[in-house]
Amino acid sequence: MIQTRTIKLLPVSVANKIAAGEVVDRPASVVKELVENSFDAGATQIDIDIVAGGRRLISIRDNGYGMNRDNALMSIEKQATSKINNVEDIETIATMGFRGEALAAIASVSRFRMQTCQDGDLEGTELIINGGQLVDVQVVGCPTGTTIDVRDIFYNLPARKKFMRTAQTEQSHIRTCFLLQALAHYHVGMGLRVDGKNIYRLPADCDLQYRINDLFGVEYMMNLKALDFEYKSVKITGFAGLPTCSRPDRSEQFIFINNRPASASIINIGVQDGYKRLMRSDRRPILFLYIDMPPDIVDVNVHPAKKEVRFHFPDMVKNAISEAIRDTFSNKVDVEDNSENDPFATFKPELPKATYSQLEIDSFDTLEKSIYPKRDIIFSDEDIPESISSEMQIESQPENVEDEQNVPEKSPWKWCRYVGKIDNFYGIFELEDGYFIMNPRASHERILYEQYINAIDSNKIEIQKLLIPETIAMNVKEAERIRGCLEFLNAHGFGITEFDGNTFMVDELPVFFAKTSPKEILREISLEIESSGNKNAKSALGKEFIAKAVCYGAVRSDDNLSEVVMKRLVDDLAKTSMPYTSPSGKPTIIFHSVKELNRKFLRK
Ligand code: ADP
Ligand code: MG
Image (tube, rainbow, N blue to C red):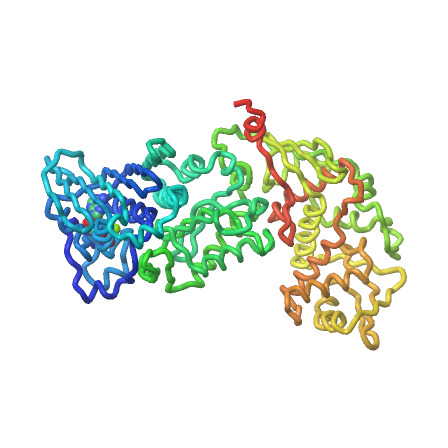
């Protein structure tokens, strides 16, 4: 960074290369520009006062390094900046501002007063400018730092004044801007007063989680998980919303690149990719995403308000984001501290470490009878009991479920207790600091899906022969899709042969599908292929399609699930790599904290 304290006029050649645009279009943009200047001046405390939505007064006070008289006078000149010297500097800019036009623009459309005192100076300078005309310069006593009062914005431009909205609307824009800046610079103490009333007093030197907590409340934090990821020269930190807590739009996504609020479509693509299979594609996660990278590989000079950025290596950024999100929501086996993987542990540093006590699991018999109460296919192998699918499920998990000491290290919760059912379907489980409601079907889908993927990956698909091979007639489109992946299906436990026309014969199936009829399975696979738009379902894709079709056999609402099954589902869910949503993005569990209950019952 080449920032000095001396403010100079930019040479025309440089000025012309900087994205031009209206800097000041409403009170909120004044707040943004002035606050950014305060950050650039190294302020550790910034206090903002607004009156009548900023239409009457915007006052910003900082304790930054301030300006001497010469610099103060220079700062209000058009294209005067201390932050860049030449074109190359734009490439490596590390400060918020650099165009050198904000102060001049603001001073030209308002009654403007600046009081500033450079650190180390005994006296400060006061400038008064009305509608761009300097009316007074004098020596004043003031603390180190800068205070700028902007009154009656657009008083001299009736046409622009007319375009301002009500005080209420302008105020809400200012609050949004404040929020963004307070998140971008969470180490800086910040205060906001609106019409004389304190709205926020955010302390300096706090961690991001405390800042989010101060701005959004502690309950909000419960729905977030910390991100911390490095990929090549891109570092991703912040918090990502649990997949179960999605939003219809991106209004709760806060994205910062090198501490600037910024947006770029490639970021959205990375986010979407990271949440794929965790969240429905039409829903958006809550995000506090801090992307840090060398300033010379990101171009911030695209947009006049510097909001939109361009990356020199967009794929690197996209991959970093999607990997960071996947990394956050996948259960890592090799983890010392369980709280890292606990979605509910994000904001409870004071909690004592509880020991995990696994749920009690009764005999397999009871389990299988209740988890798969209905049978529709009879298998030939006499050694295998009728309820093959659940038997198989158990066999496919080598760990001994009867052994309560055998604690799954990667469980997302440390302890939980079955409470009961709601609507004879949803399971309620108590945790040490709250409770969650489980959707058994969505959970079972996640479990089956991962078990099947694991079985394929480790080449351990168990196969069952059908007692009577089934002939299945499909329509032309369905048949075409199945034909396209026939080889793949055969290699993965499906005994399917092509008959004439659009008919197939099935005589073997992976045991995972035992509950479902072969016809339904082929239909499901065909549907999955269709909805993906991919005709040649092979390798990885084929695996996905089959795995999704496996979900078809998950428990249903009329299965009247027993306590044992509920416990088993929760237990198995805890072992999956993505326990919060089904493969199609539906929530598996919804958490509520005791704190939330206390608050709702007005106990605190
Ligand atoms: P830019 O921020 O793009 O350089 P501005 O018009 O916003 O342009 O500010 C002009 C110059 O005035 C800045 O480069 C900086 O040197 C100085 N300045 C503005 N605000 C402050 C402040 N709060 N504290 C110290 N210096 C400031
Ligand atoms: Mg500026």
